Length: 273
Image (tube, rainbow, N blue to C red; front, side, top):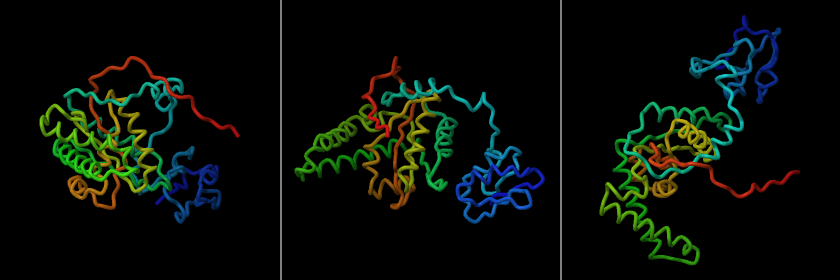
């Protein structure tokens, strides 16, 4: 429940104006939150100049007061940071600290979600990554063999992926410690899970930025999400039920490659109306 400390409230009505669901009103010159339409977005907490609003639904110790030094980012530096990011598939044998993995997830946890649903969860795989790798490669190989045996005009364009999946599993079985074309011998993966793919994708984007800021490298494995899709064995191994959806798989580790510059991109297609 959202609460207002009447002794601190000065009746400025900033929270009233900023409440998108119009659940706040002034009563006797003080803000009053009805807690009827409220979906706990926290805008009232953030905008109050007197820190008069709180909630017992979340941990208020996480709330930080704004100051320019800690909260501002130079826009040109931010854009260069985004331009410089690369998908990394070459990793050191160095393990990734739990503290850094937790901070990456924090970047996802504080990402906006539709109606403040906060319906994104995370699975971190470290100790059992080799077992998950074998299961996933076997699944991809089965999919690839089936596709190759049943090619149609619609699926012929995916033939090279089917051949790749079969080859990846064969190479892994012949040399499990060397030939890893799925996780590339990274020490950890983070699975971002949600029934809402937009919420999970937004969280994943912020998580990638944090990964790079921590000096780590990552890439999103579409092959793994394809292997896990509809696969009861993999989902049970991860402790997920059939109704949950793995939206992204972030493969995380310390990069063993150093990039020297950004790369070019196609011009943006923009329509100004």
